[in-house]
Length: 432
Image (cartoon, rainbow, N blue to C red):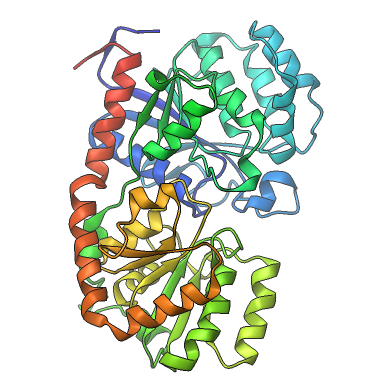
């Protein structure tokens, strides 16, 4: 499907949540939209009102209200917030597919259980005159395993425009091993994979190679390059703000088993025997399992500063940036990443990283060059490498500098934007 197009380019982005929610998928959409604004294009972000994962599935979760200053826009990017529905009945979804003359696959109803479900909203807009709908030249959605990408595809069919998905397929996470996701991805004109490993996985599961483009995740190196100052010109320091009297190691992500947060706590207790007063800083949403392990670790004398999104003001909170700038190194031995934006943030701060060894991470982290790869959930191996990096500061620093050089070449947002625009232009005839 190709459309004769003149500037400005108009894209509808779909994501399950958005600011003040903080996650890699939201960060990806945010920065693509920011680049579009800088290039005089027109992005519009569609998202649910949920600001935590629980709110996607249940009204008991956290939701942003229409009185919030960023309800309708964030960083000048316009937002369309959709209220999630909590019914998992598939009759409305089936009606939408039948109305659009799309073959309905019953397994798509499984996504309604995960949410966010917007069936009624999309059922209603089908009855509107197309002139009343926002005109987009393309619909671009993210991320699995959420129903967002299903409704993004539906909207692209309502508008009659091409659809693209960046699924961030976590191919080593058991939650993703469901045929529903592959069946849905087959509907899109283009898929953007973060790594060649992700592309190979999708091709092995029936997607054609020609429909998959590989574009890495991005980061803004300038954001981490210089220290943040107060209005009076003093440096803002994470360590001083939290009164940390010793060096610290940083983890930033969802504090669950899949991300390696629990493994880090257990490994830290072993490493404590050799490196003493090292502090561990955890930033991100917590889980009951992590909270239990944290209590155990603290009882055994481990020094931990535990922060959640509630402690921070958003994507660009100075404390988060300063934490990356001041940590000894970054650790997230996760098997559940399609790429891992936090590694890029660490390298932007010239810090070394520890990640979990799998084919995806071997494309991201160059073992013993800009970081270290360890076996997932191998507590003794994680502990051994925590001790190694702490005891070898010259090697740790060199790894950080090599990572910094790498992300400046191939992970800056201008590069990601240009690669993504090339994908758009494959589907839409674009005349500047």
